[in-house]
Image 1 (tube, helix red, strand yellow):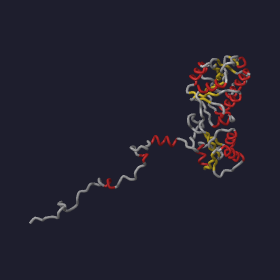
Image 2 (image 1 turned 45 degrees about the vertical axis):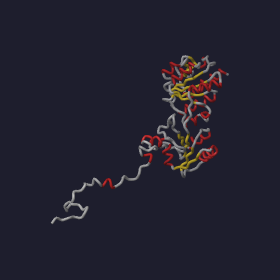
Image 3 (image 1 turned 30 degrees about the horizontal axis):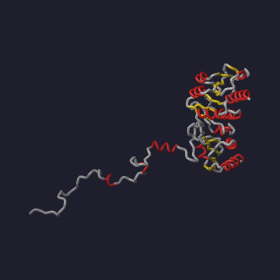
Image 4 (image 1 turned 90 degrees about the vertical axis):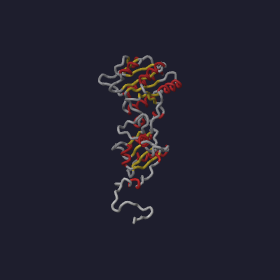
Length: 322
């Protein structure tokens, strides 16, 4: 008689069955927590890893982009000035700071007190942070003395807008362009001199040049707050454009053809181009100048500092125009 099994029961033989080898286990474990919307490529708020990196590098209010070399990018980097004397002097000089950082538990002397007083009067945010944080801000500067000042990126002008502005102010604009100046103290001193002798602005090349950093702000003794500075993508092209618009371009170089006391064309719109102390004017810049003049100095002196040379030339031209 045949054995009839239960309805629906398996008709396979008893004994061990061949398994799946664990292939079905993964489907039972689930997919883990749901990813954030910004991490899902199909979501409208998705951000790629590159986008996230760029967001992290964008300075927020109270933050900054540290510069290991001490040279800030002219485009968007925020400058950090450190050291008790430097900070209090910069605040006295009305450097447009956005935040003051004080390390916790530091010895508060007169310079720190004065820095905090000035910051409070000007509405500058004062942040108490750890010494490690100030170390990071200053790129490991061991002489920050527990205090740092954040200076925003400088707002550069366009060279043509600078000339338009100068021509609207006077019939005889006096402008200065710098060729290869890399010391922020030289730049600060030149900004101060241009302001002192009635100049209308300064032009910096975008490459191989220092920008208006916190150190330049401090050396200018506040003149950078009222003296416009333009950024030229190509200094030679800017010189050619200025010449086309009727500006006489004078190069300042130790090997100039004409001595400054013999310079006669002071009654024209002028652009004075100052070269670096070591190399002087670059070859192309010198070729594009209408005239290259020199400052007579003693034979025992090899050259003048670029800032001093610019000051002497500006004084001479201003005196001739008076």
